[in-house]
Image (cartoon, rainbow, N blue to C red):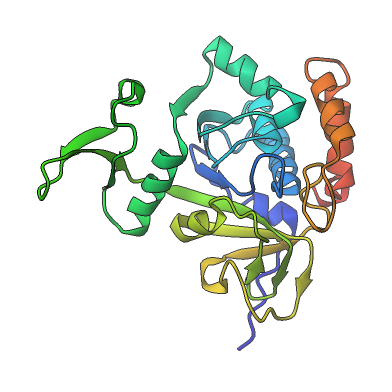
Length: 274
């Protein structure tokens, strides 16, 4: 029996639990971020006040995450980097962090990787030599140390990291949910494996893929979203729109910010979809 997992963007946004969900956002820095989905989620929040209290789980957080913080939807952030690369600081994140209105869980590449691996292995923690000899454990009292029973060496026990919903933007997907995400994958495949629900937004949806980075059995829904990563890049489909990122930086805190968001939502077809 053929399976067609395609749904509209607005239905995908409605799959996020109303309160306190952990939301994994795929992509890396300003590449292949699920911008159409984030803007649709903001439209849902503007109408209903939901979802709120989100925990953002990102290998690196950028424009997509800054938008959600600016909308007042985020309570906690887990990432090893939050910024807009050469375009400077992420303005909403910076303000929220300075004002103490955001819980920031200190992470590194190692803590995220080992935390996800622990979940994949269905164990409570994953041991590593990382963080030994640093001050990082003082910032993370939940991260314990253990003694290797074979060598007596002191190791860091990184706790498992769970994810309620992962949103990944693909170059191409098929009706069943198989997806290709390109070479710069970040931790997208790991997010797909640990998340309870996986939503793929894709530049194109075709009847069938012969190979996949994200296999169909992991995927719950597919959204066809041409240009769905704009203004971040989606190589080789399109480049980063640096002018749009600069427009965002200039608009934050000004009277023109709401209009910019509405214009971006309209570009992603959200005026009609929502």
